[in-house]
Each structure stands twice: as structure tokens, then as C-alpha cells.
Length: 313
Image (cartoon, rainbow, N blue to C red; front, top):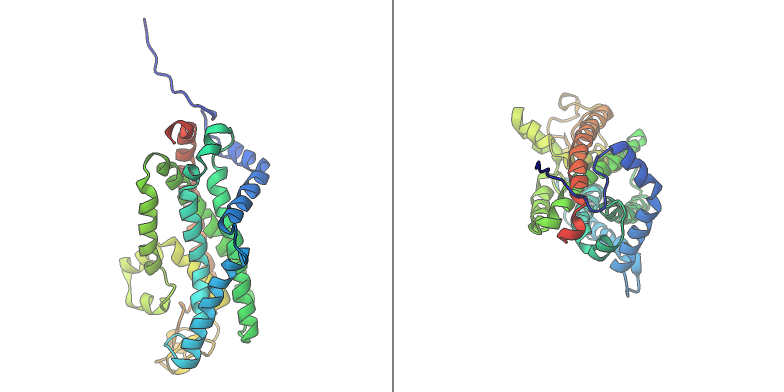
């Protein structure tokens, strides 16, 4: 008698249709908001200040670096506090969301084993909770810039929502994969933590990216710019910090579309790549396209594994 191998799935449809699945997640968006709110409440449970703690951390960074690098020690990068926080905003959102989303399935084991729902809701709710904290931290930076009289950079502010959307897309793409892996291989969370340490230093957050790009060419330059967080961080910095000069011209705003040969002094260099806004949007477009492709792969993998999460946990 012929025998057949049959694959049993405990709680999911056997076929993955991203459009149908996306529609189901949109219909259940209230659950994502509820779980995100729950995560924030748990994080600040029994604290007096509550969510204000998420605002105190960037505020302390701003005050310390403003006093040290603007009043006491004038560093190579002018207005270093604004430069640092404008780059740190996106990375903090990514690192927090990436770590919590990776462990979201395991951390919600009682819910996974007892309730039938699209499992993607768990990593997405972790990303949503990190997004709320991002909003508070952005508000602190903008208020600080207003207080010290730091000028905004016109149309460049459009880079903020664009970079944020691309960052959320990339975060969802990588988190779908790691959250599914972490159910069976618990080493995944430790690998994520380790990778974030290296990711921080290869992303231009604490150093002038223009100086690095000037020293790289060919393949090395392409590899450096291939880091998705580099494009996102540069966009946030260009939108909030602006195209400012170092060297003898330190602190001045670079002329529009400034090129090295056009600067007032050959010793004056820009902190950020001295390119037009189109270059920054182009880099974000490349990251967005790569993130969509990656998301289709990791989402499919997550879907294939999600039916068995309850048994594997």
C-alpha cells in the first residue's frame, strides 16, 4: 500500500500569500497596538516617572555632550551633541526593536500556546513599542535644538519620515527571521546582541562619515555604504544636523551642493557627505528595495515555521 508524507501545521494555512497575510495583519492592527502598550507598561511598571525615563536618557546625552564639546572642549565636529543624537535616534530604535522582536515569540510563550492569531503580530508589536520611545526621544532632540537656537535645514526635514519608514521596513525584515530562529535556536538572541555591538561602530554615529568616505574608494566604499543603517543614519543627520563644516570653518553651514573644490578653504571639510538631497534619498531607496526583497524571504520563513511555534516553545 502506498504511503504519503503529510506535513501537519497546527494553526496556520499551508500557503503563504503576502497580500492576504498583510490584509489580515491590518485588520488586527488593534492587537498590535494593545500588545505594544502592554510592553511599555511592563517596562515602566512600578516606576514613578514612567515613560519619562525614555526621554531622560537622550536628554542626559545632550546636556553632557553639549557642555563638554561646546563649552569646555571644542572637538573637531561642531555641535557634537546634535550630531550624536541625530545619528543615535535611528540606531536606538533599530537596536531596541531588533532585540525585543527577536525574543518576542519566546517571551510571549503562554499567549502562543493558548491563543490562535497571526504570530507576526508579536515581533511587529515589539517594533511598535520601540517606535513610541523613538517619538519621545525625537521630541527631546527637537526641543533641545529650539532652545539652543539650532537652525533647521529646510526641505531636508523630509528625510526624517522617509528614513524612518525605511528603517522600520528593514527592522521588520531582519526581525522576522531572527524571531523565528530564536524559537528553536536560543543562541540567536546572543548573536543579535553581539552583532549590534559591531553594527554600532560600522555605522557613522560618533565620527564624521565624510572623513571615512574620503579615505575609501572602490569596493571598500561600496561595502561601507552597503550597511543599511549607514544610509538611514546619514539621512537623519542630514535632516536634523545639516551640512556643516569642520576645520577652520568649523560650525559654518556649507554652501548648497558644496564640493571640495568650491569650499572657502581646502582645509574646510564637511561633516557629512557633501552631496545633494537626491543622493540621500537615492541611498534610502536602495535600502528600501533591498529590505522589501529581504522581507519577502524572512516573512515566508517565519510563516513556514510559525505553525509549529507552540510545540517548539
